Image (cartoon, rainbow, N blue to C red; front, side):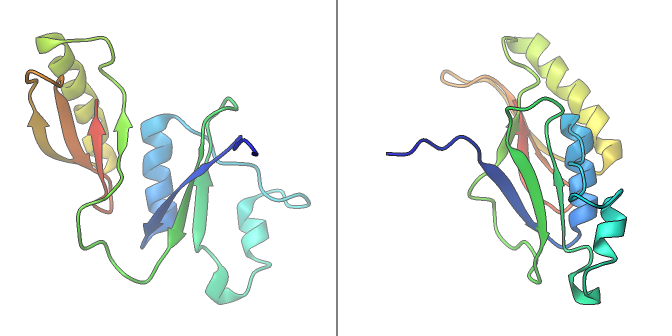
Length: 144
């Protein structure tokens, strides 16, 4: 049996560049280098037919090891709750008021980037607090 070494997280979206820019800022990721023989992604895109320019963007971790995030244009809009979401781990190891303060601080950083605050889920007997948010196209994610 083979072992998977890498995987990619793909977002369907209306504006791939906008969504990629948002997540790059949230996660501190980089834009991957353009294909060999091209100095920039813009140069590469100019070689594509007009209908295929700008349909996708990607971001990667500055240090190898994490998944690549890929953003592809699709014609349909988002209409239902995500079946999969990302947890952005900003409160790991924190509890109570200290955890909520860390979540709120990160929320305050993300709102000017285009994120929307949805609701704070306070700690209960099983889970610590997390803050539900949406990215620039309404995809849910949690500050955890």
